[in-house]
Amino acid sequence: MTHANEGSPQTIAVLGGGSFGTAIANIAATNGHRVRLWMRSEKQAEDIRTQGENSRYLPGYALSANLTPVLDLNEAVSDADCVFVAVPSKAFRSVVEQAVSLLQPHTALVSLTKGIEPGSFRLMSQILHDLAPAHDIGCISGPNLAKEIADHQISATVIASYSQPLRARVQTMLSSQYFRVYGNPDIYGVELAGALKNIYAIITGLASALGMAENTRAAIITRSLAEMSRFAVRLGANPMTFLGLAGVGDLIVTCSSKLSRNYRVGYYIGEGDSLKQAIKRVGETAEGINTLRMVHEKAGEMGIYMPLASGLYAIIYEDKPIAAVAGQLMAGDLAQDVEFMGAGI
Image (tube, rainbow, N blue to C red):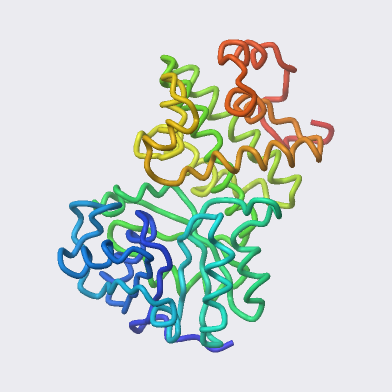
C-alpha cells in the first residue's frame, strides 16, 4: 500500500469535536498539516471559525489556523491521508460506516476512542478492521488529559498498529516539543488498557470522595492494574503492554486527576449522587459506565476473577451499600501480588 510522504504536510480528518479530538487535531495542525475537524454542532464550528477556540470542550485554548471545522463528512474525509475517529463508542460504528465509502485507497484510520462497543464487545480498532479491511488501522491511547495537552504540558501517548509504517507516520505527524508519541504493535492490549482503566478511575474517584488515604489509593491502583491485565491477557493481549504508557501510565493519571471524567463520575457517586445525577454533572461521556457493565458480563462468562469491577457493579447497578461492598473486598480471596510470575499463579 502506498502512503503519503510522512515528512511532508498531509491532509488529516478528525471525526468528533470533543476535547481529545480537538487537542489531537490542533497538534497536527500546529505541525503544519491540513486538518479538518468534523463535528455535528453548527455552533461549535462557528465558534472555531470566528473565535479560534472550541468554546464548549476546550474553552480558552487557541487553535491553529491550519485547523478547519467542517459539518459535511464527505468534505472532511474524501481526500484525507489519515482519519482519526474520536466519537463516543456508541456512535463509532455508524460514523465509520458513513465515512468508509468516501475514503481514498491509501487513507489510514486511527481510533482515538477508549471504549468497547455495546452488544458485540468489539474494540474500536476491530470495528475499523471490520468496516475497512483494506486500510491500515491503528489506535492512540495513553495518559492524555486533553486540557493538559491543549495547555502544552509535557505529555506522551502510544500509537498501536500492526503496521510499522503507520506507527512511524503517526509518530512523525503528532510529535512535538511537548507531546511524545511511542509505538507498540500490540493494538489489542493498548486498546483494552485504555477501555478498562475507565472502570478503575470511577472506583478511585468514589473512594476519594469517601476520604481515601494514600495507602488505600496505592492499593487500589496496583490491584486495578493486576485485574486489568488478568482480564486482557485472557482475551489475547500481551501483559507487558500494561507496564507501559497505555497501561500503568494511563491508569495512574485517570485514577488521580479530577480532570478525568470517569474519576469525577465516581467522586460524585461517592458524595451521594445517583448515577444519572453524576453523569449530568460531568456533562461529557464517561465511557467507564458502559464498559463496566460489559466487562462484568464478559468476566462472568469467562470465569475471570475481577473483585474490584464486580464490587463497583454491585454499587452502581445493584444498589449495594458502599460499606458492605468494601467489607466484602477486604474479606476476599488471598491472591498473588504480581500476575504472570509463574505457572499455576
